Length: 180
Ligand code: SF4
Image 1: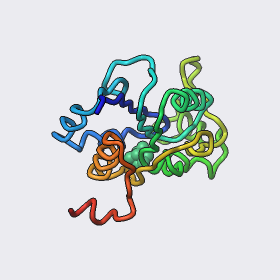
Image 2: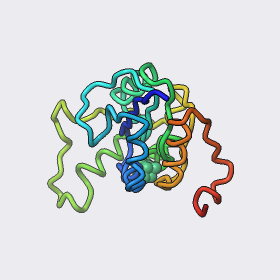
Image 3: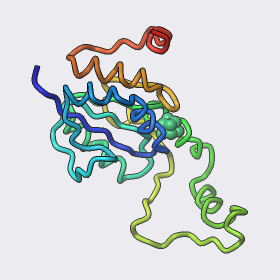
Image 4: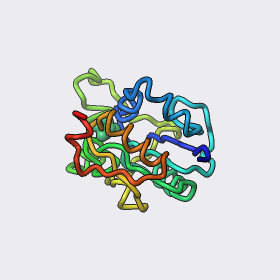
């Protein structure tokens, strides 16, 4: 079986899904037998080449994210939404219940922790957020989902090993996955 190319990407999320990915612990060696990790937050790959599988953490919160997920879709044979933010916006989408300006004002200016001295950042490098956060499947086709906040490491490993062995993961019996 030929080696696969694997990427993991972090959009609008808290990194908890990637922490869970790291929780597969020594099983990463089994992944490494079958795949080269060509891009992920802990691999210094600047570009996303054509890959077999990409795991995407987080929701789409900005035009920058939108551009990135469209590119990821183009480059990936299989796109997996990793975690509830990617699947349904979850924590990242909680701001959808409020006006964006109110959220930004609260975060940067009026929060008690700003001691009355907060200012809106003026740097062009600060991401411009869209009015609403959307889940991945609203803008691209998603092949598989790994639910959870964060997703369980056993579930992540199961999905990865199935895909790396050219099988289709079946998450219908989650209890079995967790307790063997
Ligand atoms: Fe963080 Fe949970 Fe969202 Fe993953 S699903 S990015 S752990 S908030």
